[in-house]
Image (cartoon, rainbow, N blue to C red; front, side, top):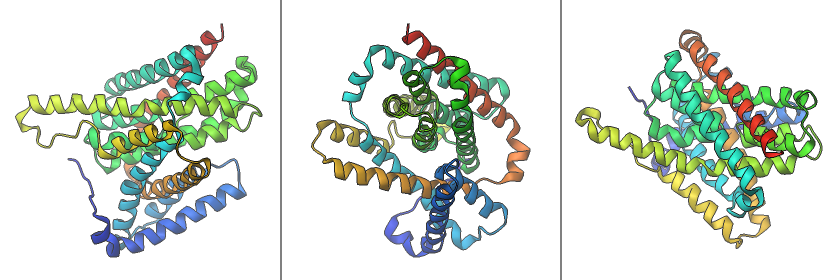
Length: 337
């Protein structure tokens, strides 16, 4: 059964205030830990802190309206603002070969993860969320696909936990593999951009190899552009399935409203009318909202439930991580020929 929480901000503000206050403190702590330990990404720390709050039984009922609002509304606002980091001219700069690498990596990772999910017996909604997170851009992609997937809070929490875990592992291991895999600096950046999940994790990984950041960000943001068409395609498929089944109930929208906002933000940025200062400020706000939202989502991660039901999901996530890294590596090497 799908569980969801829907809030109208003005009406929910008093009830959400205690939880939002805790989210604000958790966000500040995540940034403080990340600043003290640069190897730890703030997004990763936020998920861990949220899970710690929940599993220490400190996530009291009075906090839940605020943490749920952060995990849904703030994350969706962050997805919209993510569109301001993208522009269509980036596709031209990437070139046909680079674009082909990105599209192939996303398509193979998404389809392969869905297939493996079915073989492993992972529930369909959870498999869809995991596939989207690994193929596109981590937690932001999970949030975008969540209205279409028809899963529950646990499905979303597991998917976010897996992309956060594997993205954090990528920060450590991918730079160590550059030499053995024979990648020069630009190709390493392209590999990182095509295979690491979250934008922040991509930046953190690429920064460990001087000179790799530019190519990593260009490839990564081009990959993020595919978020909207993927969500739209799955939304249309879900609506067709619902139409064929009279008992299916609620039909998900073909494109969630905030994904349409994401597209509008991309279009606006592509016009070049927005000043660089405004775009920089929007990037900062987007990063803070994402960390706050991930803290909220972290409170939905219950370790006993993960132990009971998450083993197959963990195997699926680790396999998807190897798949996306392998396909992206093959694509980068072939594109360099």
